[in-house]
Amino acid sequence: MQLSILKSKIHCAHVTEANLHYMGSITIAADLMEAAGLIAGEHVHVVNNMNGARIETYVIEGERGSGCICLNGAAARLFQPGDEIIIMAFAWMQREEALNFKPQVIFPRGEKNNLD
Image 1 (cartoon, rainbow, N blue to C red):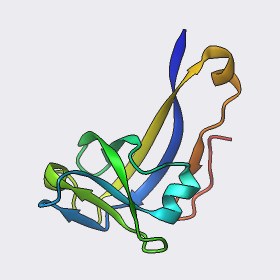
Image 2: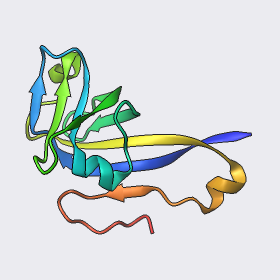
Image 3: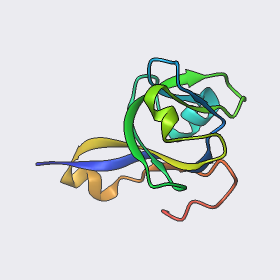
Image 4: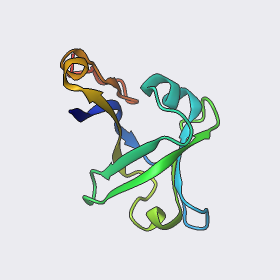
């Protein structure tokens, strides 16, 4: 049996842009993607801590060092600049692998990883 396990998380980041007229997705600065272990095209869940909105989309690589977190397309109606969000990716694993797996969690504002 395989389980869906948290693989990567960007915790309490802030939306920098919302672009209604883009086709869809979330643009994340390349260095944030790398730190969280995310790749372009990866399926992610995004939660808005300000209004409770939850979406699923895919990642587009943004400019390294820009701090960019931009919700594109229809999601721009639910996420606005300044909103605090959580971005999560999951991976399928066998139970035995999942028991020892540690997700890659980053806190862009410098908070400590409390999942260790």
